Length: 364
Ligand SMILES: Nc1nc2c(ncn2[C@@H]2O[C@H](COP(=O)(O)OP(=O)(O)O)[C@@H](O)[C@H]2O)c(=O)[nH]1
Ligand SMILES: [Mg+2]
Image 1: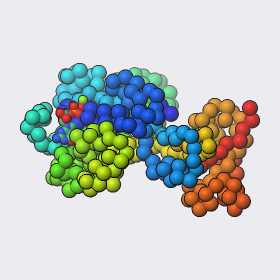
Image 2 (image 1 turned 90 degrees about the vertical axis):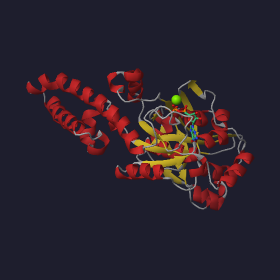
Image 3 (image 1 turned 180 degrees about the horizontal axis):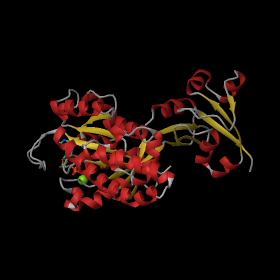
């Protein structure tokens, strides 16, 4: 499933620190052979406690988590949409991702230049949003001039598109990102071809200093309020601490986290939230050879899920044996689950549920 999340924000807010900590993290490096595709693309393992619960019951030779692709997009500056600071190129990279993580600087440090002078989440977020909106505006204007003629000559689809494109141009003209105003699936479908930057789902990251890891500072409160106002998620973390944590082995990590008063690294939360933002879910396969998490789109039916493992599984799909983690924890083995009638047999129309444990039967 090649779905990617892009990390965006102003320069010097901690994007690369977070990216490096995520893509160089020990878990990812051990389990994925191509951890870094190129310097700005990384693959990260998605931490999932359900996998630990499965591994505690079913001993296996190999454990494979779910993965997600991450892109470190260079910092955007005011004027990027006019090409300032290689702006057009960086904005182009955002076109290629499916969701964005917007990092906002919430830490003071006189040694690290803040391009706009000082900490101000509201201003920083609106600078980025403005550049994205200006880019979208020129995209939609080009789209309008492309289809106007066809719409006038009676092409129904072009006419429908024209109406939505005009609406989008109007919304952007008012300074509103598309994600806040266009939510109707039919309308969204008509604008897919434009790959609008402000139509992508956003998750905010408030990057703080180690002194604000437990208690929110004023800047974090502002980011949270902005996120809440647009129904977006917000994760607070300290990039610097996270990169130190990522370099530690499991035992040291647990101790460090305890000292900090945290249950888990902020990056673990960030990765899980980003995975959800992409509309991704997980099913598991378990056995002696490997316990593995597989990534599907929310709403996948059983044969599509089988196809994630192998196209032959999808083509020759017969049925899926499915059980839940809770039942596995109760009955401890597949034999016991079967004896208790806890393994369901599901057909082609079964919609896979997040967390299902599955075994596929197929014809070759
Ligand atoms: N104090 C503090 N410094 C940080 C934090 N995250 C990143 N930095 C520092 O800020 C500087 C810029 O970080 P970088 O990740 O390169 O920013 P980018 O331009 O957004 O990619 C580096 O010197 C980092 O060490 C943080 O959480 N706290
Ligand atoms: Mg950077």
